[in-house]
Image (tube, rainbow, N blue to C red):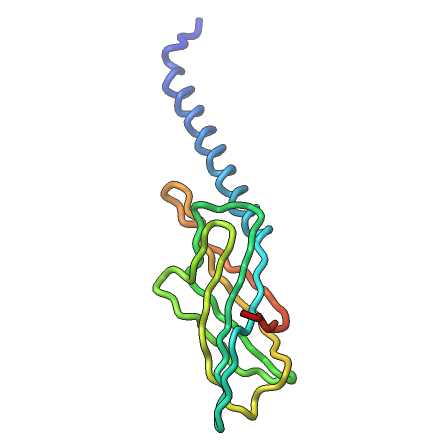
Length: 155
């Protein structure tokens, strides 16, 4: 005859492992849902030209239909190009948390200078956003990549 008391610790451990696995799957699903739904674009909000350079203020605007109360963005880098020529990699300033993010909408601003001879009317970008999704003691990091043409934002 089997003594069920001998198997009780093993059974409790097995239940604990399955609960932990279910929590991990739920965390991962929340993270991937947020990452898959998030869309971002790069806008120019102001352009100031001088004799030698052009100063452009850029704004990242990102939106998600899924609310992520426990997510934040830490870094943004943009590779800008004009007329098929790379203008370089531009890092948005950050103190560890990028811009303002309320769980659905990200807004981050930066100003960069360009020599006048390098700019055209059309700027292309490849933007890299580093996101963090906090769940319990876990900080799941990911990098999202967005490409497009810089749009002008009227303010």
